[in-house]
Amino acid sequence: MTVLPSILKANAVALLTCALTGAAVAQGGALFTPIGDFEVYVDGRRDQAAGVYRSASPPAVIVASSRLPSAVLIHVRSRGVQALPTDRFREHGGNLELQRGEALTSLGSFEIEGAVVVIRHGDQELRLQPSPALVGERRLDELFEHSPEYRTAADAYEPDAELIAKLAKVDDEYRVRVVFGSWCSVCKIYLPRGLRVQEAVGPGKITFEYYGLPVEDAWEHPQVKLLEVKALPTAVVFRGDEVVGRYQGGEGWDRPELSLWQAVSASPR
Image (cartoon, rainbow, N blue to C red; front, top):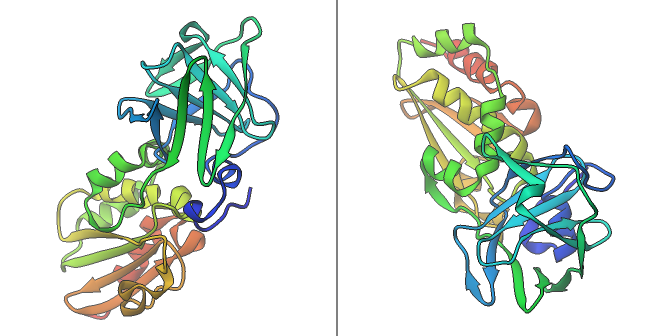
């Protein structure tokens, strides 16, 4: 599925679609992974303990909040919402697996107010509001905390062990400056691979920096102009103050350990 470059500029239906992939209707056996695209509000109060989960296929979302009578299952394409009792899903490695069972109770359809999704659950109101973009200088742990899907995707990626070993033993000091957007659909897919590479390389002579762009006027941002960013995510590799390589977009981040090694090994001594 092609998604919009900015979920915060989309309307609520498009925003939900950006957070999901796949087709058909949610059913037993579907696996839902945590996402950080939304903040959850119940009766006007934010519930920071609530969890929002998506299924890769089919396109559906589960919102679990202890402030509601039950979790809710949202069907994106039909806009239908159903009450989801706790015995209809189980936690598995931080994910939720939907269990088969009797038909679920309908809660009607979700409504749209600007970029906010509104759901009625009995006498209570559930609102899904787009999460603020992760902006500025950020640490690895902050990326994982802001976007739980980064952790899931990073754990699923297996970098080339031989290349990782070479990167861990480089002689010179290198700095990898990564420019990304937490709202960027390509970043959601590929940035976690680079995060996994950093973890695999470990502390040493290669250090990593992350800079998150705001949604508004992202392509006019000083970092974009300074580093000549043309696509997201972009990694610029420095040795001292000298740029020795870069890799960007889905192609450059498909195997980030290879792109990084090519930049490091090709740099003149």
